[in-house]
Amino acid sequence: MAKLKLKGKDLRAIGYPESPVISLAMGLMEKHYRHSSAGEALKILGDVKERPADYLGHEVLGRIAEALLPKAEPEGAAVALNGTGVNFSIFGSEGIEQGALSQMNTAVRLPVAVAGALMPDAHSGYGLPIGGVLATRNAVIPYGVGVDIGCRMCLSVFDIDPKELGARPQQFAKAIQENTLFGSGGQFTRAEEHEVLESPLFSEIALLKGLHARAWKQLGTSGSGNHFVEFGVVSVAAFDPVLAVPAGNYLGLLSHSGSRALGANVANHFTKVAKDKRRLPPEAANLAWLDLDEQEGQEYWLAMNLAGDYASACHHVIHEKMAKALGRRPLRRVENHHNFAWKELWEGAEVIVHRKGATPAGAGVLGIIPGSMTAPGFIVKGKGEAASVNSAAHGAGRRMSRTAALQSISEAALREQLQREGVTLLGGGLDEAPMAYKDIHSVMKAQRALVDVVGTFQPRIVRMDGAPPKPWMKKKGDAVLGE
Image 1: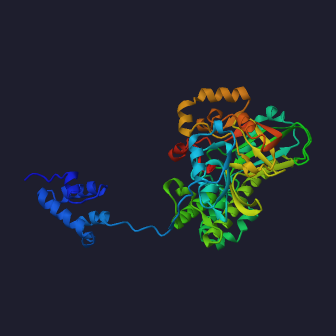
Image 2: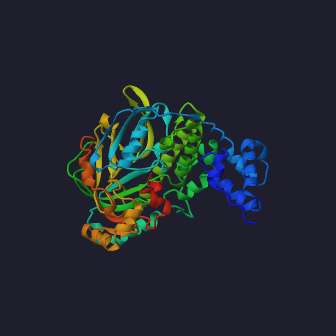
Image 3: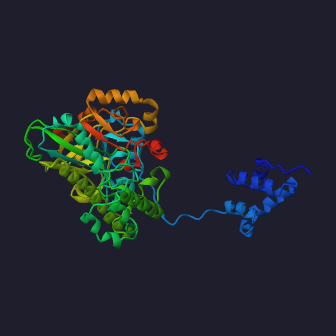
């Protein structure tokens, strides 16, 4: 007897919908009913279509029946986007990719959106673009903050002649190598102590209970992706009363990293909670929010702030170790988060300002905006510009994805760039090469209305992870730990 062979048009003729159930039904029938005639098989399939509930327990036909039954609506409430969004300013629009603009246009259409801005280093991310700023009404968006909660910059300025970097490079390289760890899973066997690990939230919030041990072992580690610890030259052209460092050249220690596994777990857990509570259109799904009046919203807010404190503690541990290795206390320390949400006033009302890959730039607020492993970074003082929601860029911003960088940048080109700029690289791959980033000078030019430059930092000895990026990191363009 010939084996059964069905056609899609035959199933559509008996009322099967144009959906994957047709190929499913054809495959199952041809495998398990291969000795039946086409007529017999279609009669069976017709019965299943008319009475799918009666076949749910059937070993073979139950799969077809399940696919035919209407799917239950998710528990969360469906939420529509506004037809038009709130107005937002774009800085450096000529250097911003379309993907980031589209993501920002979606974000400002959220019903809870109040104000927004896009920084000149912006590029696509998850939910809110990296370089995106969004103010909301009584709502916090986990992916508006990012996966690496509290990712931050920290600069220590030492009263040491920076010429020492050239005279004793091995000593400074050794200090970096011995006083922090790189890599996404890096942990110390002997952990540091810090008051942040004594927070009662580790026992009060269920999610955090299982994260304490790992957070303890990762305290003072630096992660992977675009995170770094580097020595360089700090130059202050003129005395600024807020920076309070006399004009001159100094040895600087600059670090960039975040809250490690603690922040990533908090972000991913509460994003799922937010998505379960609010069903947004597909293009806005990663912008699901939690009201601060809800228990889940309060828990996220507390956990987010704890992750931010933990990120700060990681930097302080690194800088304290380095200061001890150098035998000197820093003259000044400047630091800032750039993946966080703050309660701030906007037009007289309290709002939640999300800065995902954006630097706080309120009037007189100091911050650090790095370039790349060879390009200078800038110590800045905010001007409090309302059009940017008191924000500025958080770096140069990527101009090519990790995949594109790996495919188009050679080892020889990277070595040549490092030699030309006088930079020693410890670790760090082609995906983080300077050529993969935008021109920091163009980025700074695009935000002259947002910040004043009060000092610069020129990298000299740079430590990064150096491990090949994972496939999921290459697809994304920016490391997950950088979000």
